[in-house]
Image 1: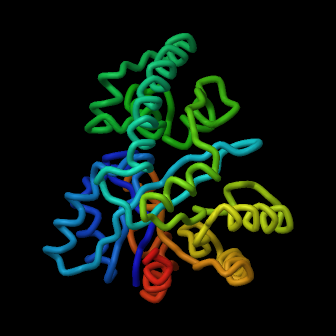
Image 2 (image 1 turned 90 degrees about the horizontal axis):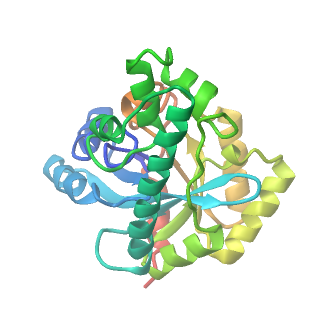
Amino acid sequence: MVDLHTHSTVSDGSDRPDRIPELAADAGCSAVALTDHDRLDGVTAAAIRAAELGIDFVPGCEISCEIQPGTMHLLVYFVTARPGPLQDELVRLQQARIERNRRLVRRLADLGLPVSLDELEAEARGAGVGRPHVAAVLVRKGLASSIQEAFDRFLAKGRPGYVDKERPLPAEAIRLALASGGIPVLAHPLSLGLQAAALDRGVAELVEFGLVGLEALYGRYTAEERNALAEMAQEHDLVATGGSDHHGTYKPDLQVGVGRGDLCVNDEVLDGLRHRLPG
């Protein structure tokens, strides 16, 4: 069993990067990927701990891409913090995120929700501040009853506290991933909100750009949804990947390896990705 979608304190998870392999080992995983949002800072620490525990580690990240009318997430595997075109883009996106967070703090202040950058960085335990950290601070200050309510009332797209961030287009993100020796995979495809036929057309277009995999076995999907996405992956000659999308306390229903308890991604999935590596 493997888990190819997890997050740590480097982005918007509550567990340290070196804790992710520990959780994977406890769950019985033979391999785990760390896929923080737009960052690779945690992969070295996670890789070291995974080696100590004797489990396979896949370095990666999750990139937010701009589409109409919303956002698409792209998982990229087998990339590390060494120099490369994707890594350069991630540095630029990190700076753009910092500027977005400054605007977000000002927006919340205008709404009568005083939150400081210092508070957000303390919650995030670093520079990788995301909306879950904002939500957690709002809850702690009694301005929301739960992280979900904070999103529903203030932080979700279309709500008064939402501030957009810069994102690359999918074709560019896939190009950079491939140019850096990475494997690009469409994350949680149903989050695009498309009907089956439209999703199929969108996937076909992404394949033309160089997409390699489709995250069919996602932590929150039903068996029927997973099966349908696995069939779609097969039709497009994509690797049907999977993972929990573990965020720790920020998504408490999703646990490393097992998701909501019914997730099991076979080791062969990782083998399938490795077979698609260039060279």
